[in-house]
Length: 150
Image 1 (cartoon, rainbow, N blue to C red):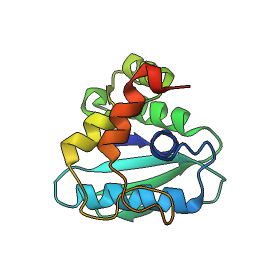
Image 2: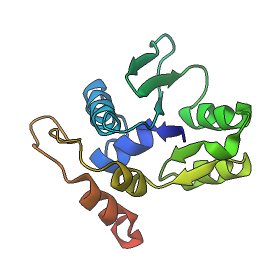
Image 3: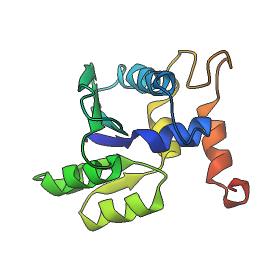
């Protein structure tokens, strides 16, 4: 089952960064690539970004930058273009994107469910430079609670 990941949403969830840096993106990409390496799962992570950034791949993970539209629009378009949209799973905490994906026939899972499925990477984890390891699952549980959003 292929996964489509809402890159900026995942960074915002983990780091609280509304404008992620290239280092934030690289840390998230490395974390996910490490987790997927032990499985047969394939994923594409989509980021908002300037036109001209290149498509890259890290084994089971493909990194794509939406050109000329938002990453959300790119993800929904990918689901709509799919011959089997019900086989695509979008990973996002964005309720509006989740609704659009479901309307297009795709599945949605929360970042918590995705990271629980793929376990720890064994690496330093997603986090700010110099911040040390981050317990992603703990942060995801925290931010899923409506009382902790603000």
